[in-house]
Every structure is written in C-alpha cells, then in structure tokens.
Length: 142
Image (cartoon, rainbow, N blue to C red; front, side):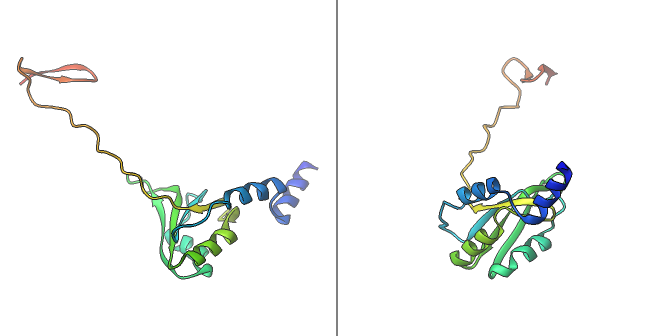
C-alpha cells in the first residue's frame, strides 16, 4: 500500500511540502543572468546539462563542476544566459524539477569570494642545522 502511494506521488507531481520549499527558494530576485544549479546527478554531462536549460533562452555558458583529481561531477553547475529575463524564466521552470532522476534546485549564483592563499612555511635549513616537520618532529640534518 505504501509503495503504491509513493509511486502515485512520483507521477502526480511534487508534494505540497516540496512546492512550499521551492516557493521559499524563489523569493530572492536575480541580479545577474548566472544561475547556480544544485542536486545534479553524478552522471550528468555538460551537453545534457545545456540541453535541459536550452528551451528557456540563449545560453552563454553551461558547465557542470567536476573534481580536479577524479573528473567526477561534484553535483552542481552553473548556467549563464544572455539576459536576466531568460535566467528568471529558467529558474521558475526548472526549480525543484527532476533532471536525470534527481531533484535539482535553481538559485541565483553568488559572486565568488576572495580566498587568501595559505601562508607559506619556511622549509629551508634553520640555524641549528636541521629542518622541522610540523607533523612528525624533525626530518634529519642538512
């Protein structure tokens, strides 16, 4: 019985709770034509991603963000349109919808925050003749 109601929910659309949640997410206004999309499937490619967002306007860039080491999707991406109106239309139509079996959320992209580079440590020889390794202790003589 519970299985049948779950299947019915999938075919009839989102639950009232889901629609309330998506309407809360839509309250902020767009200030740029760039959108942040979260909840992507790990198998979604850049081409599939662009195809899904093409019907809403002319896309400047559509990119799924990938891990540098493994090349796997991180589960989010960015879409940039030529105008804010096109981005708003895509946001309204695609927010809280299924894409490749996963529910995606479309939000305005925030500007990238500046991150200072990590402080550089001195790895050369010290005045007493050996280098220190902060994780182990000392590493030997020079």
